[in-house]
Image (tube, rainbow, N blue to C red; front, side, top):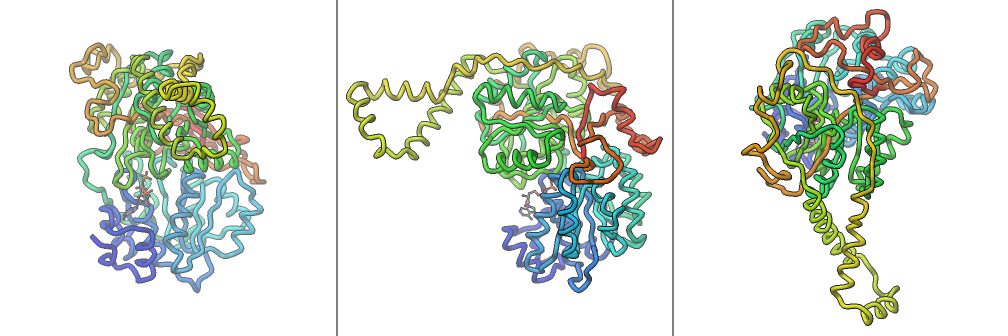
Length: 551
Ligand SMILES: Nc1ncnc2c1ncn2[C@@H]1O[C@H](COP(=O)(O)OP(=O)(O)OP(=O)(O)O)[C@@H](O)[C@H]1O
């Protein structure tokens, strides 16, 4: 369906066209008309299918430029997502001249206060910093007509419910409330009951929760062999732009350093970095200065980086929903992608849980041999050499070139160049990755016993197993690693002078699992029981397991 059939004004249609959007996506087509007439909407659609514009366009449509109050508030689970959403709304609202501002933790609050003096009509923010501003009265929410809880289920996972309730209380009861996410676990319905008025639940019918555009593989591998296995797969798949998800901040640090030691262009992103550093790493990834982003789950939700070809789960995520979002960083807006999940033998029940949620089986992938990895590296180097030839200016080095060509044959020179670019020695650089405590055994389905027998995934020679992703292989080069580890971050670190509740001196790590193992979390599980977040309570008890960063 074309956008001009959805009841949007000419100004917005112009911005949409400038943005390059031609057809509305299904979630946009279904929810925009409802949102435009003021309905509360719960919108669920696969990752990368345009949910931001689905809630953003009706909001922009309703903005009254003569009203200098905040008319729409979007709450995001992570800083990076808040920034990205604000940028998208700024672009879509440019022709209408809507003022959009963003507030998030870890950044100078005085600067944000200064920016807020422009009287934005739309504010995007992370929960902790939003509350700081409302407490300081630098943000007033009493004219908010529309409230969006983006990635609502993640904000519950992160223990933001109390913050969200406190924010909601400051908005008028007559507001419109919108909830969007690719995953809607049962507890979300309870949010609907509590904060929404007769919400319409729009779920884009899809056979599977994950998009068909992503080829999903798994590799069964022992924990101590994972790193070598992953780097060999990189060499074979040669990912153009990859995200590797690791379970903890420490792991992300170690993986990033290990990858650099082996000659890859990688950097880590997690909640212990300063916000400046986080922004820098993300910018490097977007500009392809690095092509491997190693991240905790802070990068799992919503991040829309063009051309991410591969997602590697170095650690399988503890929550099946996390898997959906992690691999959703690739295969966006019609592009194709590859995901590879590394699973230790004792984690096969987690794999099953993911498959039960996504209703899709991952294809087993056999680890690449050292020899295959070497061949892959040399092939990649040959591609690099071709690019180098294009970009090298011979004139400056003519004398040395002449001397070399007189002395050596073309074959010798090419071989030396290829071997230097491939830098095969680096493949052998020893890298030690600290062993993580294994995930607790899953309860409920997939429980106990020998999962190899139960699910028939016993490793060994599976008949249909594909080697190095060649099985389905629309793309043979695709390794991707992704694993999410410490996900979202929430913004309550006090760097920029947040006064507030303290906050853990930085993004909090939270154990998002706590009681979530049974797959049927109750609303109450998310609530703080002692004035602090539920996840915080669980943190010390279960810290080694799924630690998430938030802010
Ligand atoms: N109608 C459209 N036509 C073409 N591209 C679109 C359209 N709507 C959105 N996009 C683009 O698709 C990409 C994904 O959109 P968006 O980030 O809103 O997805 P999402 O559904 O929110 O994903 P996630 O669940 O991962 O947060 C973005 O690059 C966006 O610009």
